[in-house]
Image (tube, rainbow, N blue to C red):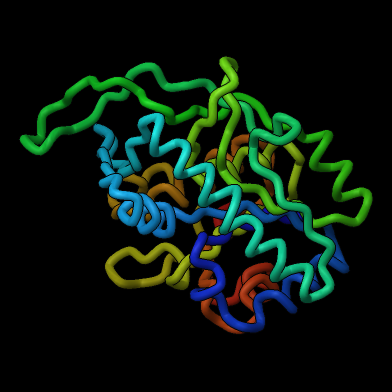
Length: 266
């Protein structure tokens, strides 16, 4: 079983062979897709006159600040337009996909972060209200597995449900890690727009879990979340985390065969 995280601008950025490649992998093993879509959310927010706001944690991780209105736009774009576009694309190619948000069947449960510690423009730490960002607490693994057992390919958007029954924005990479861990996936694959983790402009082909944690502070925005998510998935029992380029031919098969990508193992 493999859990694959794809970006939200899937239709534009993935290689045209990706869908047929997913189909090949689906025939051999169960596939669960988790998608992002931050760029699209930003675009729609701006069109609706809502200026997106980003914050940086003391650990150097950049994320979207989500107030109530942003959480609603996030849900609309992620679980609506993006999720259904991916499902439609898979259906068109003979893959029986089912689109879900984390709210459906409590697929992703999270607790609302009450406070966020951020680094402000002056470089000082500051505590702000947590907004509608969630920390994942549970995944309904039985439900996802039952869909796989019936031959469906789940496509999950990273909107979680809180204990107070609110929509929460959770990071797509980390959602993929938690889903992979809880459904006991063998592998988790993060498709991106570069070949993998680049340090000093060189591709890092292999890392152990310990090494991955050690290099985290040296990694820039964007990639650091993928490496963090990879380490979380491995700690939850996934055997192998892959970071690979979605813009090359047959991106999933080539990542599974460790062709020119980053492989992180225990």
